[in-house]
Length: 254
Figure (cartoon, one colour):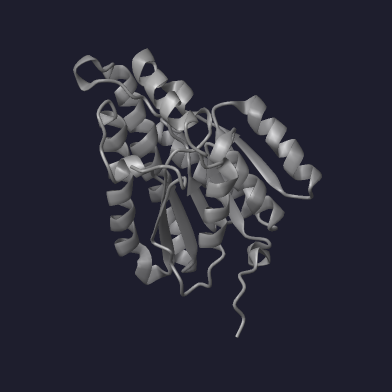
């Protein structure tokens, strides 16, 4: 009995990673490339994507750079279609793009929250919709959606963010139940505190100061920790679907 998983099973597979210009997305794209996957990387910051592509190509990886604002639903669907047009198919979609605007509900900036809903939830839904046809036709595909512990537990000053992440969790389960008969796997990952740029998005200074102080008091998850979890999920045999992973730093209580 072979009890080991081999990332070499990803050799030649085609992956698209959104939000790949930093953090979890960058780490995931790097690990997928190291495992032999062909990787499309998407985010708004083209210079960051170009730098990552140079690094991955130096490792021998095939890389497609797709600079786009994933809050634009047409652009979100276009990056999927461009990946399929370039590589011939899409096997693994990792929806990681997102922002975290934390602020009290009564004074929240509705423009910021609208953008957060567009990017965190509707952009993710749009890429999933675009990827489904090809995956179903081939009877093969894996979609990984990045949610958050905020999609399991709502906290003060996180109303809008939690709404988007609860939405991702609910949507992902509905997607899984619609697509499983076509051998399309769906995984939702819910990380706790991760040491990334995400907290820099918070415009409400008291909330940003409070969450930074809380995070700095623990050994935070690193982007590579979440990327390894994604790799574990997508490296499973075809008959295994890891539906949901909830992960926190050891030091995080809630």
